[in-house]
Image (cartoon, rainbow, N blue to C red; front, side, top):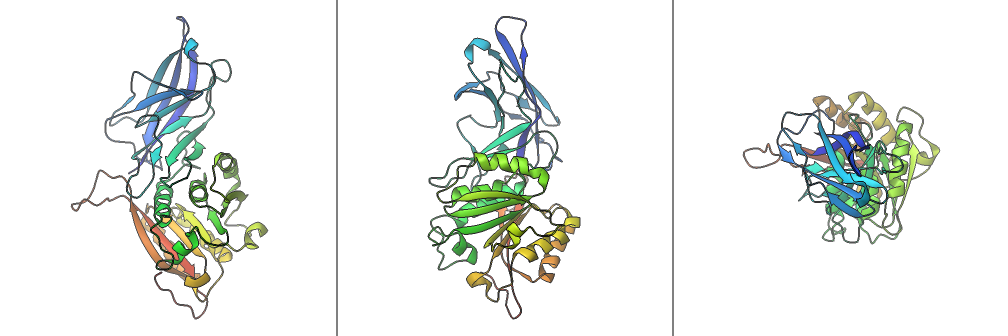
Length: 372
């Protein structure tokens, strides 16, 4: 299971009554993506202050203990040693490394970077948190994703997104031969003559679509979600370091409302859906939206759009999604599993914590659903 370091109380500067020292105080927690489980083991963390690129490590490492739910932390600093805005990072590793996201190596603890705060200006960091990921793709910049702080699970990174990014990285690897593999690999192949047109539904903070646009050149991504997600999507889109020829837009889209013209009038080749099946009540609206976006094709393998769905199954009610997709004319074309870090493996050493990824195509009358 992946655990996320979160700020329950964002970093804040408190002056000291002695000399030129001041103290940075924050409260963190280590939880699962939904915030329903806390790390149940002792672990030593690293705390770093970044001042204009100069990293200062705390001599006292924060210690998380099994059974706790919150960890207050203090970092004493001499005012004369800093000149400019500060950022606090809490991580499970040294400050020079971003977190890993791949099928062979995925970080078990996801680091937290605060926003800027200052001795002479705003003494408290904004209520946003940055994640940094090494996508392990040649020439690809580090992925920076901002999300909200605190205990709310809205507009946070969820496990299925990390699993889907790891799998997309495999599909984008140089060994993927488009002539011998799936329609999905054909779509993702970098030597296409036209840009890849991608839609992400329920994008949240936009991590999957942005990762794809950073890993793959000439990828045009439209990120969609409810209006309350637009601010964090705009923040992450502005921070993205996209591959050559790639671009990212964002649009408010409610699955229960009429499809916006900006979506309905476009033809997308790849539709991304990550961690959107946990609420069974919303599934009919999700499938209805997919049916409006993806056109029926007699030969999906040649020209049809692919719907790529990633889920970490939370409860049995999510199975209705597959029934609804079949009823809407979608065929299951292929599926994969991506293992997450998991200390509770079975007798064969396999992870019990997995992200399931499904590729769907929509077949018109007379079409046949076959594996890619």
